[in-house]
Length: 408
Image (cartoon, rainbow, N blue to C red; front, side, top):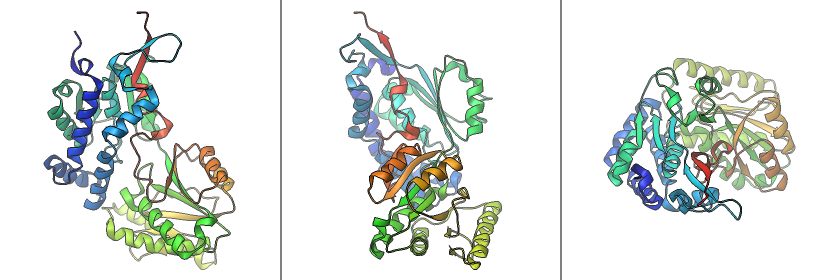
């Protein structure tokens, strides 16, 4: 007799997930209120930034989005209930991949939730290494209120270290978020039978085409979106804006656009106040500002910041320099064509997650593909991924399913 989620029709599992997410979209939902406070305490983010993160996280988990993602990758929801649907060739049956462990990253709020949800939709047993804010555990508690079978299949816990204090050999699939060193450490402990789904360090970039700089109004609209992409979550996550390229030839020049962007960042700082910063971080941003000001004094572009270095828009940055990866700091680099961006990412070995674009041209799309980006977005929407999106270029649910021959 099948037990747990295996005994449930996948549509009832999907509905329970969507209903739980809908409850979490309510800003007054008590578990969310408590989790919000813990998220702010853990990350140092302002309350508006943490609210924005939770709105985007749970807003993506709708029944329509979840079903569309499964259908795109597997053909139909029915395959998850054991029906063989793979084309006209040999019949195959889809089964859960097994036990899944998801190891959260330190930065991005709720990053473990999407893989955990899709693993549960595939009827896998899931254990999440939660962060100190216990966000995933709190959401799993709501899942269990929606469907009792989640009680034994959706677990979240905290433990020290990525791998040393928990035996990963018992899992069939390990999803790991973290820097490259962390991913390599986890991989070294796994046996060949365990599937590793790694999400290492990546960055997102922006490209402003000359067509989007035909008027000051266009420039302001683009700058407003870019400012939001920059300041949210202190530029920490892989979907933050880390490098910005502005095409020459528009009515608004790259240097002028940097000024417009700086004003937009000042407004965004009001909407999303600066998070707590360590003395080392404060000193690093101030040093970058001072270096930029020194170069600007030599006629190399402009520097836009404030006396406390809460942000930096550096129009003295060149294509020879990698991104700074400092909070709320961005280099505005002038380019002649999208191919310059491909060369930049190649030279600096920059793994690109997403590209924000202002201006639609085939060569810009080709640039995004050439950088290896898994997503193209409008400015202002980098930090709003959809459930159906391929994070890190990987499928959402296909890797949590295994196929066997069906000889019935």
